[in-house]
Image (cartoon, rainbow, N blue to C red; front, side):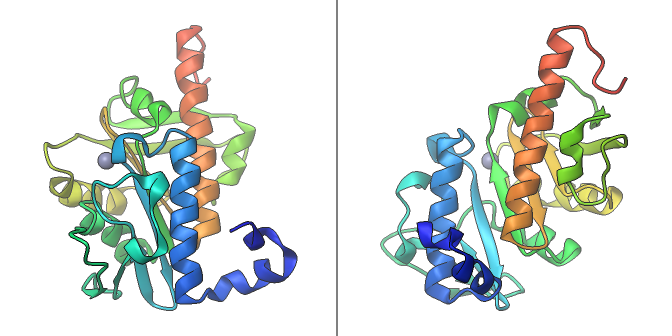
Length: 221
Ligand code: ZN
């Protein structure tokens, strides 16, 4: 779907057709798989377009998703269209819904990035870094601010994270992400482009902090 990057289509992307949105979910899942964010069927992305939420199914090879495999939900999280073929809605669905409903997000993604996972082993309740140029890619932060991301404890089943994720979202109004201990991260934005930018910047900052700590540098100095 390289046409997305052409100037004409770029303008149209603020109102994608249902088919374009389905294709975009698949394209982004492939990108995230190639970044190592969705290996072993983990991770995924959902996009809200024209009031409907497009979401990948659970436990599938994220780089091989097809547009017809996507679930469509309404703004309350009720399923409107399901792909059949024995596919089940993502276990992340209640978690994605919290970011949509509490933060009015336009897209939410879940990454099993090694950088995010490692960052959770280096901090107690909040990831923390400051004085990083890449912080400017996260809405509300400048290069010389301190950027924090709350960390919640992992659970045996992904859906059991929903309550603690909602609490962390409410208690950290400046954050556009919640880390899950030894698991990964949930990231959102006002639309899919901002969610993607946020995810890339956060991932860079997680990796930077882990590497700094390895070298004995304090990421909050
Ligand atoms: Zn996960």
